[in-house]
Structures are given as structure tokens and as C-alpha cells.
Length: 129
Image: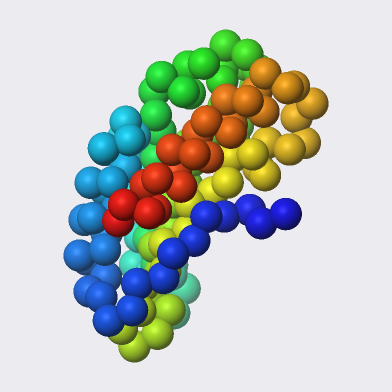
């Protein structure tokens, strides 16, 4: 089972793809709760240079509230991470977590249904970037 929803953008500026990703998330009702600049963190903490790599912790409050109401400990798996990473000289890959895959270990069909709805929303986000 794949655990991410992916799309590669060739000959694209990293920052432009980040902005389009933020916009696509907003259009589907997601907000960005956390942002981790992995490139900057690796440089600061380990003095290692790496290509652009950004993790956006996205949350759709309505869906998160519904999931927490069904399974209170599901918060350990939130927010839905979306990564953007440079994959070549001028390519950027966007990968969103597949909530169905990440929650497969929780035996709760009601939660699986909510995860499916969120997956559909994240697929729309990735398609609309």
C-alpha cells in the first residue's frame, strides 16, 4: 500500500510550488499548523547541506474534530503532513500523507471512512497545485 499521494513538477521554482500548495490546501479547508524547513534545520543542527525540503503540517479542523470524536487518540497521527522537496535540478515533488494508509492500524471502520474523505481532499489538493 502506498503511503503518500505524489506529484512531480518539472522545470518549476520551489517557492512557486510551495505557494500553490498552500493555496490548494486552503481551497480544501486545510490550514498549515506547522512548517519545518528540513534543509535549514539540517544545516543548523548538523552542518549538512541538502536540497530544499519542507514539511507542512496541514489540518482541516472539521475533519480533525470528527476524527477525534470517533477516536480520541488519533491526534497522535495529526496533522496531515505534506512534503515538498527538490528532486532534481529543476524538479519539485509534492507528497501528501495518505490518511487511510497511516490509520490502517486502527481497527475502527467509522474512522476509516473519515480517513477516506480526507484522502480524497488531499488528492484534490495535489491535483490542483
